[in-house]
Length: 269
Length: 72
Image 1 (cartoon, rainbow over the protein chains, first blue to last red):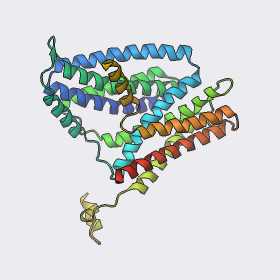
Image 2: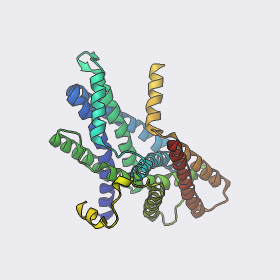
Image 3: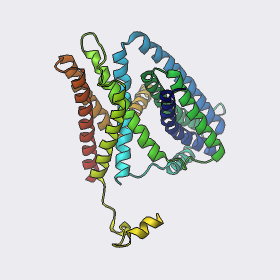
């Protein structure tokens, strides 16, 4: 397997891993508090719906849409997702937003599940079913977009799909072994990294896709073609570091090291 | 009607998320790039560089509005 294929596999794996952790938190909260059977049925129904939507839209866009229109549509969505993740990463790193805490999200889901009361239809806990369905479907749609974009860009959709399947298997295995919310995973750092990739691919594809508006509908070519992606990832990294530095809130006085004791603080951290 | 509203709400949640300003920034930036592409004033390299720069500027503006709004 070539280095490019490994790169594709690793990029898709981490992007889908983060989505999988978010879906697993929701499903575990429903399973532990309400009904595992209903939660799993919700996930199953979401997987069927995802397969249907992907097949129908996949066939439609690859059959009827020119390449540039596909780039513009998927690139725009990817760019919106990526910039939302970067926005949160910037606000968190600059101390303006609380860090993403899977444990706290799990607790909120559990409280909601307990408050919902008994809503059963033919033995199925509808609350657990619907919440699990929505969680798995939403995160699953993002996985589909990631696989399509990264896969088509590298002209290797099967490798991208393999990365996504490996990520889902890893999340399920860790969740099964841990039997608790996956708070031990460094999700904030992972989300920042994935946000950089999504924003870079989104920028690349959406700008290329604006070629649909010129005669001939040919995609706009980036200088250096695919190499421009590496420059874009580096550029988004530098830009986000600048935003973090500019927006950084000063540390409260009680957390500041006393002058002359910085070396002690550094040693203890 | 309830199902149509739920369907719309689902897609709004999925695409727009919790900050509509990001989606608005992306749409405005890409609309400007699309206008430049349609006009034929710039070559591919110019379009790509201008497009990337416009997206960064739009993102910076949406972030600034967000931070200012949260200050109040």
